[in-house]
Image (tube, rainbow, N blue to C red; front, top):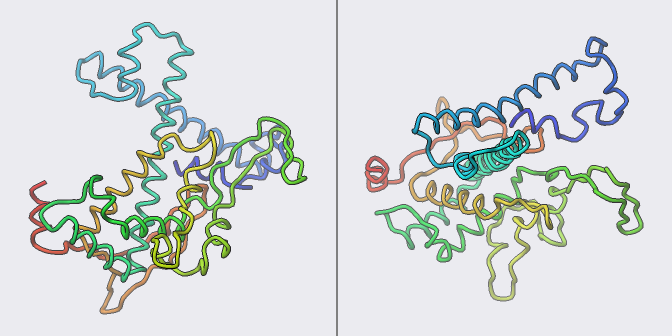
Amino acid sequence: MDQFSETVATNAFLVDMFPILQYVPSWVPGAAWKKKAHHYRKTLQDMLNIPYNWTKSQMAAGTARPSFVYSQLDANKLLNPDEEHIIRWVAASIYSGGADTTVGVIETFFLAMVLQQSAQSKAQKEIDAVVGHDRLPTLQDREQMPYVEALLQEVMRVYTITPLGLPHLVSENDTHHGYFIPKGSTILTNNMMLYNDPKVYPQPERFSPERFLASEGNSKQKDPREYLFGFGRRVCPGVHLADASVWLACASVLAAFDISPAVKDGTTVMPSGNFMDGIISHPEQFECNITPRNASVLALLQKS
């Protein structure tokens, strides 16, 4: 996924700006990208073939666990190469589309909780009032936790992992507000600009989950998830699964743990808050303290 993120990043390789360079031999100075492309191609083929072939071998041994690939192979005993090719690619797309983005949001959530201690405390108080200390939150609790919901929305807005969305190709010539966009153009969504538009989010530089809570005289501001998962018919097909997974993970962490800045030699060490380059932008490595909130939670975790 790191290779994919690097490859599709804007202007990551000179050949993206000057396509004629694709014909330059790999031994020419400055064409190291071509060797990297061959290496990345092998990684891609491994991601397509190794899990697929492993599932087939598990099925032959009678030890396969339920999965997308298993269900397709079990329902279609006689597949031609084209059909197998489709199954490989769909399976890889499902995995790659959800794994890195979900992990990225959860990483970012931990960063935000280190930096936004008061917001963390408010969310924990809400969870305690709804759930108590004898269990972890479930999706059935979600509607009763508006602040937790608003907190995650603000994390996704302020610390977005997709500052330029995902690139898409224009399938036909188009004109937008008088600007001609030829077929084959790559379109990127400037999510970072959308999330920091003061007309949509007043004081966008301020971390404030309350902006997503309706109060007297104030209406809720636009949900950033409307941008995060894409637009129109190209919206992420796993949007509901990803949203539920992130909510469950983050709500459970808040219920069970306190997240605080790391301390070294008696000095509090705050994260930089910077993000790495890439189409999926992960926070730079940081340290933090993660401690169980109380004995009841610790016993619950040990039991589970």
